[in-house]
Image 1 (cartoon, one colour):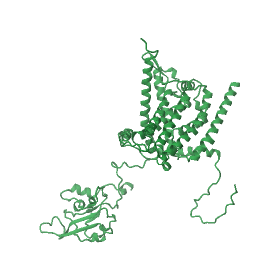
Image 2 (cartoon, helix red, strand yellow):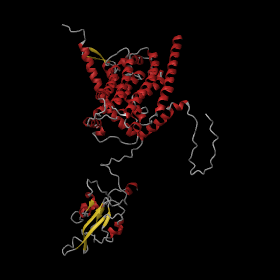
Image 3 (cartoon, rainbow over the protein chains, first blue to last red):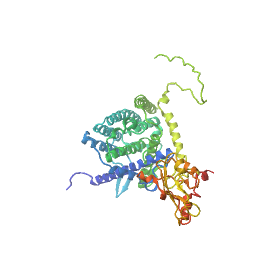
Image 4 (tube, rainbow over the protein chains, first blue to last red):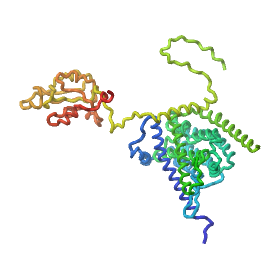
Length: 350
Length: 197
């Protein structure tokens, strides 16, 4: 008796892949918090955390344990359901992005060819945008449900910032899509890997710059961390949160960072492509493994740059943020799009 | 908008020649993108990655004190291990913070190996919360009985714990505990003088 025409093995395979990717991203995020503190310290001529374990490597576990053991406080004027929903939504939205990222090419195991990508949907980029915009709800709901004016103001800031920068981000991306002609991340990466084709950053340097700046804004990273401006809003949208709910908010920022780094690496820096190496000459499994490694290295470099910027640049004023977003980024992205379109037309006409 | 009136020259004498005129130029488009300035800043922070860290890993490494550091008081003994203090009270008089109190007692026959002179301090207390570590007691002492060592008062949970009695202050006996005595003297300890010179 066949229940349904479902490839059960494929289902199991995907479930395992999802589990690996989610736990790996959480593990990496755990150590990104450690890296943040270390990078900050080194940029400021300090040694950073070095007491817990060798080189302080157990520090993230100590931090996590501390957050879990803390007393959980829900303010009695808060909307309980939404108050709990906020951090969960922030974390979910952050993790959902990883579904469409092509982590590497295929591996051959047990006579099966396994794609190292959870879902190669043909509207991958649109999916990413949809999920990323959902992350704003985490901030909005958390800030509103806290029933605290500072949290609410921070949430409003976060929402308006995300909306403003999403526009420029989308416009800068359209230029990339015009080159590749596809919305699937896998296709975009494959095109960049093809011989004779450079990484997209070579064709779209301005587009990449705009995308990168908007990614900083989307992740609420300095210099765009207005939703958590301590000096004006005490602590921002997660002011009333404690224990692991606060941990989820802080953690989702790091997961967001990893995911946006992965997206940037895939869109502009060839994804799992190893530069100056023809992967087709290697054994497929080896090539896939090296591909994952290459992507992780690229992600690590991006995360370092994120941190480097955080510990260099001060926070923008709110009007500066809006001016930059609406009056500089969007026109620049439009110009970039126009130039790309004109060049593509000119090349076709030749 | 009204034009700004011509800048008046104010003839004020400059204190240094480092003053610069403030530029009132409106920022250009490139500047308003903030990018050049941000790259400059990032270059500065990057260069800090290769700088020497001035950190001292405290419990393992300690910064040496200067040789003239004035720390916790020590009541001295002579070479034969007898207490030098005669409870004359000059240190208490000299103390600007009134941190020192003492009670004198007369030496009994048979105690010559404990006290150097006929009078000694039966009780000698310094309140470390009052003490300002000025070292005037050290200067006032005619018997070379009190001096300030190169340690500082450790933390305590009660105020009472900061009132140091004779047990806390007296230096170990050089005859019965020569090692502890040498350590208390602090000879051969690293000081800033020995590291910098």
